[in-house]
Length: 114
Image (cartoon, rainbow, N blue to C red; front, side, top):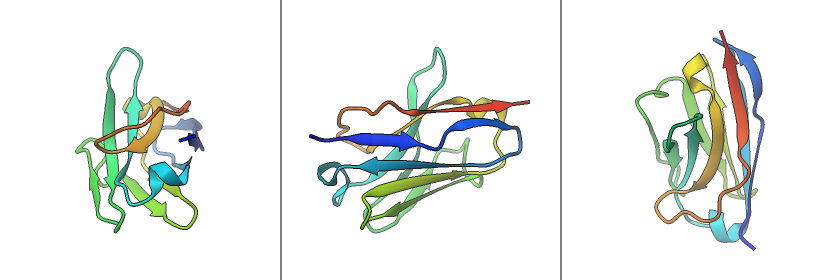
């Protein structure tokens, strides 16, 4: 069964850092482009970073220069290093494929306090 498990969220002050991890089953990870999405209360879920199987990365303007996405193809894991966090980064963060998404995991809550 396809599965995504996100972890690493928490409460952090503005300016701080967090590193998120997402363990994916092989059928999801494989050679697919993976992405990190986030959903703030009352807002839609948006893609904030993506990484191809070969390591090409792309970011939403709102996180460019602050977030870094990476992947370990042997561990079927994708990471999101978040630096210089802002209050507007507060959201539930999810990982999934980019394009044809599969069932969503539970996500991990990131709360940035001022």
